[in-house]
Image 1: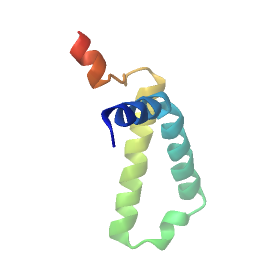
Image 2 (image 1 turned 180 degrees about the vertical axis):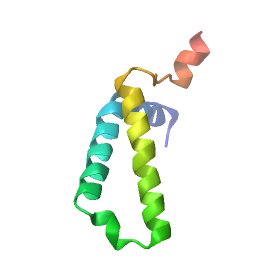
Image 3 (image 1 turned 90 degrees about the vertical axis):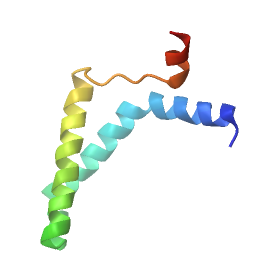
Length: 78
């Protein structure tokens, strides 16, 4: 992958970060509400619950503007 392709991919990921975070958070909440975590053993259930907890924290932080994306390119310019 060229640097330009990598930079473009990073830019697209950054632009879609909030949208993607919201999408995966909604999916995990839906799975939890539908009881789809119940099919996992206790250890895996705990891991899935932890993932949902972290996604919840990140989603709240994103919504409050507490997460700011900065590219390496902009860091170099400053």
